[in-house]
Image 1 (tube, helix red, strand yellow):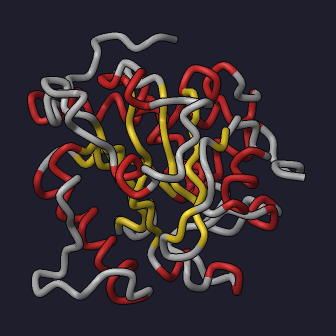
Image 2 (cartoon, helix red, strand yellow; image 1 turned 180 degrees about the vertical axis):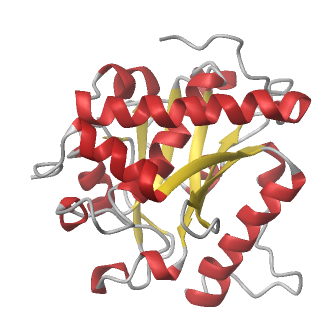
Length: 267
């Protein structure tokens, strides 16, 4: 069972011992994000072509919030992810990546993204962890994973702390920017494992082929936060404070793609 060997104290201490999260709000920090993606997506997995500048980027990066996870012991950035936002000045014309790739597969009787308040939606994408931190056989060929064996001990400096840090950082960013609904295109098994952490991941369409079989899903930010057990909530509060410190330090750099962090996110 997930988290069976962990307590509120061991989870928090284990995370602080190994990692911290950093909102990538400056050009320098975003470059670190792009370098991790290039190492994982281009060099290790060949999902994307090699870039001469050593940075993997796409057209959605300009409308995204990026985050990094740093190793406490080495100071090296070892994981990254982003939230792709909708242009608040033109929300109906600004589409998220999954809306393009899953256009024919979405079940709009479940949810129609075009009928939502599009200023409050975002997509989780480009999750990546450097190779040294994903060496299980089941990790091969994947930029990011989470599995039950990740939660067997607090002494191994990768999951659950690294995987949870990435996801909880994205949830904290979403809360700080007033995002209420998150979409994600992911493997079915990864979606199931995330669900076993207490997150309601709702499938909203059929499978598509995108570096393997992927399913479009949605997550409610409020439901995630309200439904956290005391172990996950303790870790989330630590990570949320780290995110808030990063936002405060960034000043005007915290304004991304027309989105400004709200002064006091809901508790």
